[in-house]
Image (tube, rainbow, N blue to C red; front, side):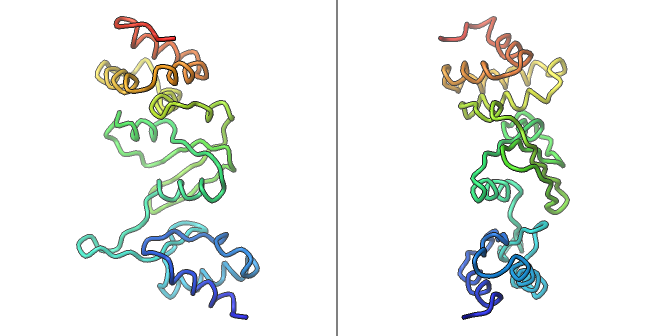
Amino acid sequence: MKKVHTQIADQIARKKPGALIFPTDFRGIGTETAIKQALFRMARNGTIRRLAHGIYHTPKIDSILGELRPGAEDVVNMIARKEKIHIVPSGANAMNTLGLTTQVPTKLVYLTDGSPRKLKIGKLEVRMKATSRKRLSRIGKISSLVILALEETALHQIDDTTKHKIKSLLEQEDPRKLKHDLSLAPAKVNDFIVNLFKPFTTMKK
């Protein structure tokens, strides 16, 4: 039987450039300690790159930009798939995802029904906060993100330009999904959104 290091090296050699690698990818090949030692050695000799604690990736080189690193969003989405959990952006991260702010956050916050954790990816801090099932059970692709963004925003400080952008986004949402998500939103967020539509129309049933 091949050594743990050799088996892991063989599997990694078949991965695409830029592929994310986690120690759990190799469960069943050897002990946790042996797997971590093999990955540590491969990172030290340059076969793979260490991205964050317990997360690696295969090298990917662009002819113009040079070596490329996986983005934080790629890492978070991969964690969600591997652990079969839900993860959604929150606060300033949600605002940025929606295009409601051009300011790039130095800290990305996600809500999850999995285990809370913090990651440091380059200079960017990624935090995954445990939350209730209720906050993750909204169904509108747009409305759920808007509500998550507004929950952690000082609503009285939102200017008219941003309010118009929020209203325009919500007008693209299925009214039934919007109504469903508002039923799960905090009262202050519900009132804020309803007031955006008041001068123009009423919510459809």
